[in-house]
Image (tube, rainbow, N blue to C red):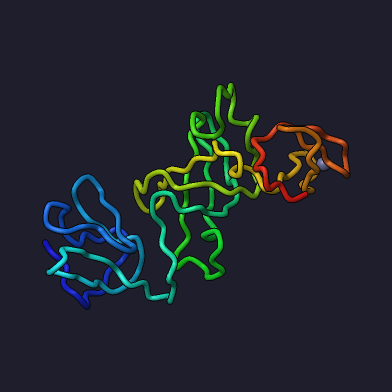
Length: 189
Ligand SMILES: [Zn+2]
């Protein structure tokens, strides 16, 4: 099964196999099968053995390893925080579809972190780096570098954004609640 240039594809559609093609823009390698990340049209370059998808929504941005993204924490459960990926850093265009990423507890910060709720809570705005494109709704992220982590922390009691009061501490200006986070060196409040 091999997609041709001009084929209309949906997220998850198989475009070819990685033995024959290099997965390029808006595609990912799923255990040897190249699949589309977005709704769009296939562009196959037989000479250079590259297969890519041109998204229906005009967007020059690309999600790939080492891309920095901005997102919001949706859920913190056990060993993994789920992140709604809103945009690519430095690119104002909206992504053609919404993506969900995950941060494993071992990738949140340098050194030992006993529980993920010491790093993130629901509603926090974060900057993170893509480490692996696993699939459509499963993009591995990390925040261990200094400039990565929480950009704005949301108070778990009253939902206001909190002020930085220490290296890993934030305090709510409304209810004086004090919490821990893995803060970015670019923390904004
Ligand atoms: Zn509060």
